Image 1 (tube, rainbow, N blue to C red):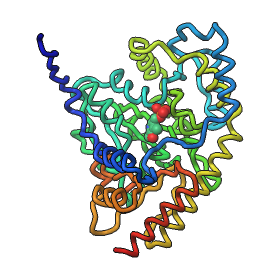
Image 2 (cartoon, helix red, strand yellow; image 1 turned 120 degrees about the horizontal axis):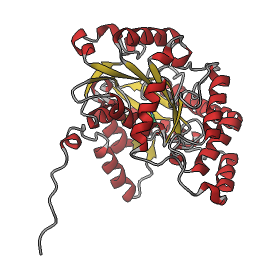
Image 3 (cartoon, rainbow, N blue to C red; image 1 turned 60 degrees about the horizontal axis):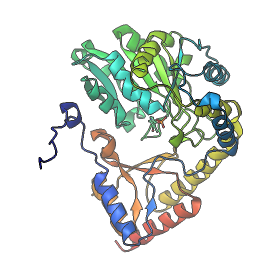
Length: 394
Ligand SMILES: *Cc1c(COP(=O)(O)O)cnc(C)c1O
C-alpha cells in the first residue's frame, strides 16, 4: 500500500502567525476534562441568545421553497433596501442600494476577501496592532505585506498616521481601522475619522473600517460611521455585522457599504467563491435591522451591568481599569512582574479562569489581557472571588 500523499502546505499558509491561544485552549480542555469548574472570560461570542422574533423570521422563511434556491450574489434587493434605511436612520448617510451596499457571509468574510480584490503581491496593507487577526491573514493570502500601526494607550488606542514612514506609504493600497475596537474597547471620534479620510485620500489608500461593534456602546454614547465624514465614500468602505449586535454570531450575516468601486471589486471576488447568503437568513437579517432596537437596548443593559460589576470589583482588588465605553471587552494592563502569557497561565492554573493574553492580537498587545463580558453576573462574581482569594495567598 502506498502511504498517503505528504502535502507541503502552501507558503501562504506557512506565513500565518502561530495561533497563540492554542496552548490556553489545550490547558482549558485539560482542566475541564479533570472536572474543574472553568470560567471562560476569553471568547468574544455573546452568551445571550438570538432574539425570538429573529428566530421566528428565519423559521417562516425556511418553510418557503422560494428561499431554498441559490440567492443572488449581490444579496436580496429587500435586504439591501433595509440596510439603506437602517443606515440612513442610524447615521444620516444616504447609500445607493445597488452600488454601495453588499451583504456578506459575516463581516469576517468581507475582511478576509477584500485584500484579494485590492492588493497586488508586494503591496502594503496597513493594519492595527493589537488587532483582529484576519486583517493580517487576509493580507498574507493576497500576498500583500502587512505593516502594523501600533495602537497605544497614550494615543487613546488610535493609530498615529503621521508616524507611518513615507517609504511604506508609497506602496500602501489598503488600511484597516476598527472602532469601537477589539481588543482595546477604544472608540474613535469623528475628528479622527476626518483625519484618516484626509490622510488616505491624499495618498490614494482605501480605508476599510471594520465597524463590527458599531452598536455596542454604553452610557448613552453612539459610535459614528466613517461615512459621516464628507468625501469618505470616495476613499472608504465600512464593514458591519449582525453578529455581536443581535447575538447572531453563528448565523453569518453582515454587510459592506461605501466606495462603489471597492464594493463591486469585492463582489467580484465573492461571486467567484461563494453563491450568496441563504435567503432565509437575509430575511431574518431584515427583521433584525427593522425591529431589533429594543432587543439591542436590553442586551446592552445586561453587558453594561456586567461591565460595572467586573470593573468595580477589579478596582477594589487593586487593579486600575477605566470603564470601557464600548464593545463587550475589558482591556486590562498586566500587573508588574508578569508577561501577558504568564498572567493568563496563572489565571488558568490557579483560578481556573480563562482570559486572553494581549500579545495574541499582535506585539503591541503585550502587557495587557482581555476579559469578555459574555458570561452571567453570577460567574463574574465567582471569578472576582477567585481573584481575591488568589491575591490573599500570594
Ligand atoms: C467578531 C468580529 C468580526 C467578525 O464578525 P462576523 O460578522 O461574525 O464575521 C469582525 N471584526 C471584529 C473586530 C470582530 O471582533
